[in-house]
Image 1 (cartoon, one colour):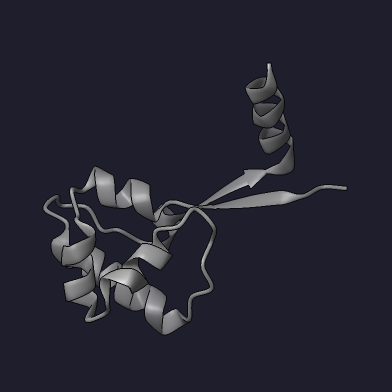
Image 2: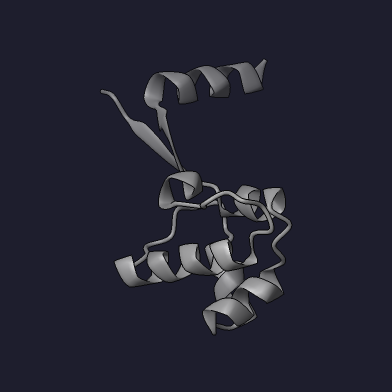
Length: 91
């Protein structure tokens, strides 16, 4: 059975563009705990509106000339790759 893994990459995006959780919370007008929940490794359930608000805030805080999109926040890893990395982690 082919299984896929969707990896949530908000932490990596924030680190790459030097965006602090407190700044992101202020831009999105949400609490710091809401940002903490979004930063967890597991893919959160987001409404279209929340994902849009997240991307807008990240882009406003981003100091580089690069547009952050939902594709930057989500990584698709086919099952064969996730199986290979799991077995290599065990070695």
